[in-house]
Amino acid sequence: MPGDDLKTPYDALDGCIGAMEEWVAAARQGKSVADLIPVNVPANPANAEMLDRRLKFLDEKVLPELLE
Image 1 (cartoon, rainbow, N blue to C red):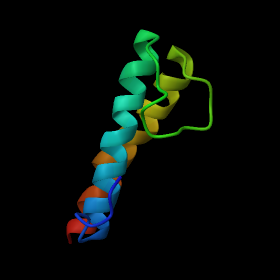
Image 2 (spheres, rainbow, N blue to C red):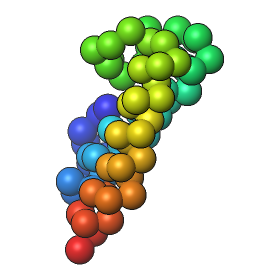
Image 3 (tube, rainbow, N blue to C red):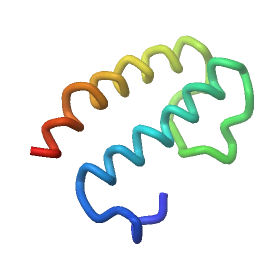
Image 4 (cartoon, rainbow, N blue to C red):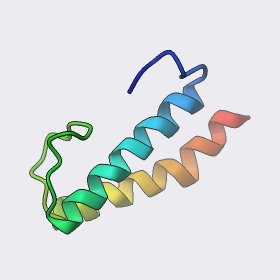
């Protein structure tokens, strides 16, 4: 993720969540994650589901707090 466009903590976390959501989608489908953000677990559907739940929490509970 290039840092020049990230002006706020909200932007940084939102960008990270988006990049990891791309990893989740690829891992669910059994596609290569070689060119995506590195995640330190095997790219498989089970790990994708666990990460997706955590990303949803961050998106719903943490990101809104950064706007206040």
